[in-house]
Length: 431
Image 1 (cartoon, rainbow, N blue to C red):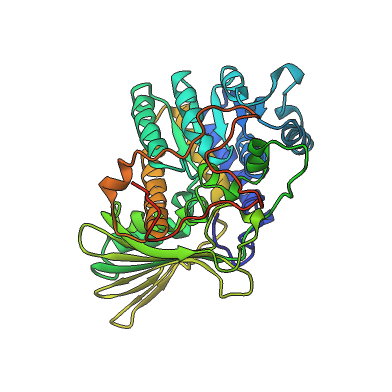
Image 2 (cartoon, rainbow, N blue to C red):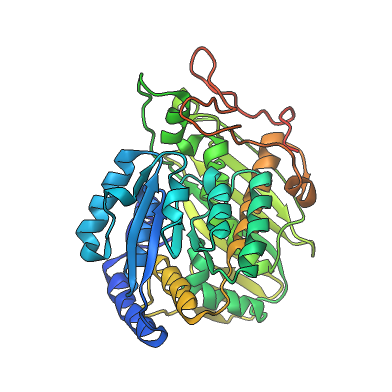
């Protein structure tokens, strides 16, 4: 999700602005002409709003065709197929025998494609990515790429295997494909504000949807329909959303934090329908050079909101998300932009250009490590203790169920009154 003066954080993930789409079409046309237009067959795994959006952006690239879809829920697949067919017509060729429903749908859909889009709830990302790499497919996977340390380790291992197989992997951290961010961070790396000693990063906003429980649902189905509120599925909002801002901090620092400490809890969003996650987190991330990133993320309505990143250096300050720099000598710079391509579209342009030109393209390792940064932050807030990066990455705590069926009991279960156990700082163990 990318902060914008036009789009709100809730709706920005679902569509491209009219101007961005028009400019994107021109850029795509030029790339396709340069790189060739051999048809690439795409499979979509995870047919919710983000998956539908990502598939649409892939189909905006000439020479691509959607030929298979998979989702745990039939209604999700049907809705996505209808929307994509209306928008992209003959580029969508997914007859009934290439529509797969259930927990194993991903294996069947992946087998039919050249390129796989992985956009299920994040807890499933490691097993889906592993399977795509095993089958030798190029991948676009949404962020975050895991919800616990074991999942991150699996993604890192699969990323190495993908490199050996010359597979191209994109990850949905679209700021890396946004011209304003690219130019601003380039200038920071060139020393525009001197040595950067402090960063401030925020994802403070109102929160997201809830799907009410239905009597006929198993616990597994209920949690999957409300995946955002369960750590094994979504990671908590520090992982699912705030990863974007933490990834920018890592990008600026050209590395990952060595430890973190913080606090958080549930003060407002305490009803049973909000599962087990916190409604606020505040974390200090420490990097190897002694610099600190101060992090906030919050889901509480009626409060100060910000989705942004800022840097303070020995020679000035930068509003990274605002693409502006002020020097202590009075100098000022702001990215002027122009008719830039929407970054959600640009990341697909770049991935498919790399596939067609067979150039190296691998965002999986950074995606995994920025995911781990967010998980490290959650570990710090859930436990209330300082956590070292290596201890966090090597944690043996496994959030995932032992199997995947509709009758499987997730590890987090409600009490007789329907409430879920919530982490208690000072008590909860995370490593």
